[in-house]
Image 1 (cartoon, helix red, strand yellow):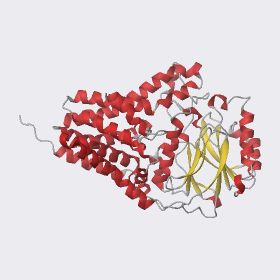
Image 2 (cartoon, rainbow, N blue to C red; image 1 turned 30 degrees about the horizontal axis):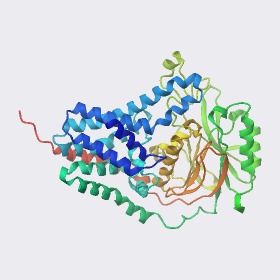
Image 3 (cartoon, rainbow, N blue to C red; image 1 turned 90 degrees about the horizontal axis):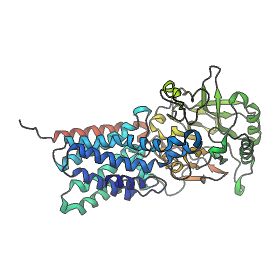
Image 4 (cartoon, rainbow, N blue to C red; image 1 turned 60 degrees about the horizontal axis):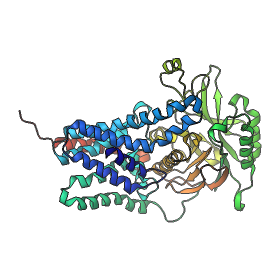
Length: 493
């Protein structure tokens, strides 16, 4: 039952977004904890619940292993099982500790609220972090999402778990009342959303900037095929040089996706000059790779000058474990196991960290490459506040079902948290631009080739979350856990 409830709870995430069904599943699972049982049984229930949740939420994780089935296909089922079962250990810990320390039904539930939120926060930071499919992500696209401007994704998780726990705190005869109170708790952020989000469009950036997002739609199996590379490159050049749709303004900035240039930086001068020529007066931001003389490879973003020279660059710093680099590389190399994006050195090297690039009249941008958009704590480490966020990504690795939409949703949430517009160019989609309230200004759908011109929205003043990050939520968790523990009665000898 717990396994099935976890699977249902994951339906609140993109692309379905059935948030209220997800809340019902969490409420039922928390009700299971409230039943009298040894802590080991509670931990097993928590693990089963988490395994069902992550197995559905991360089902897309098999897709990268199917790109080259001959080399990596055998890893696909193990990857999903290990990820789902491994992440579920965090939930098992929360359920088990709550049952071990809780002395009554209500006490166990009260302990679970901060504990489950805390382990979700822990998995966002430990072992390089993996804040994908957080419980609070079920509200992306709903009015409740706006609360992230104050409390972030972990605050949304705390709010969700607390509301789902209310029925279990009530006497059985008052279960309906508990359900209504839980709904009321989750409806409070709707009021904040109504007050925060204006009815009309947001103000545009100074100078009325227009950004063009280019999406070549190169499937991962074909992306590096020598016979297909020229076609995808020419397609991007054509989209860059195309006249604005419906007579709109010409773009001021053109953005290509991650690794959209098929040559290493040291050999890319002719291609970069072609890109700059196609862009005319527009600045171009694009992704490519470079290799240092010492053999290290970097996944980078480059800003081109009008003559095709690289005037600014950024190296990706938060790499994907087992994808862009291999932990314990020497051990895995002896077994013939390399990262999915491996080159002759076994992967990429990490850049120095978050950076802000000055585009002159186009303002300052915070560049993010693919996976980096899921880490709000990395954005907080930027040296200064940017005027807008640019994400270039290759979501062809994620398939065509849930992965690209979940990645898109997390980028949308970053805009809300920071109060800063975000634009993303994705190889196979979804390319999109969001205003600082997370409202879409334009998109290129998944699996389609094309481009879209979007107005660049102006940034808001720093949000409470931009100023304080997760510190307030962490403080609340400490207070809640301490209060719940103080309710423990001493056990007499």
